[in-house]
Length: 258
Image 1: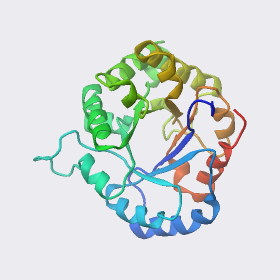
Image 2 (image 1 turned 90 degrees about the vertical axis):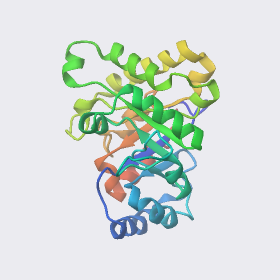
Image 3 (image 1 turned 90 degrees about the horizontal axis):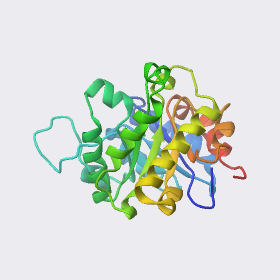
């Protein structure tokens, strides 16, 4: 982390988990522990049907609510999708874009990711843009080339001020939900590479300002070591975010000199 230049963001991705009643129980468990957590921004990205309820449940805290996906069109015949304006109107502040599960199961591409990033920013939402490689791609030693391509396409057409509002989440696909985690050094190296790509595109000042998260099975035990890396500015947390105590431990791990 580098708190001098950018905000640390710890974001939970609930995926397809928790009903509204379970969300209420979660809020009751974690709210007494939240405090002011002034050292980082805390976000919970929850299923779309839970967003209005979650916003109300956390309205007296500094925790922000986000969506897990959005469509790039403003309206239309896209059954089951939600627009950025729908998310914004019910109180979402963030939205995850291009998660590997969306790419794998719903055929999202780098080009649709770019369209969604533009739509989110135009609506005033902060996009959390996911990039990452498979185990096969890592073993073929093409991680940097692939990440460079993903980042360039995701940011295509954005202004410097817009890029400053984008959060990049490096999520190695081989470490999502598998229990495997990149070493702190491996994760830090890719996050540093991402910042280097942004530097070449937009200059050093913009690159310093962009929050880059790590999202490959960060948990209560490894969070502090990962967050100690200078270019890892937070985490996009999956399974551990479903448990209030584990999620809180990761938030607390962000309270370190950096």
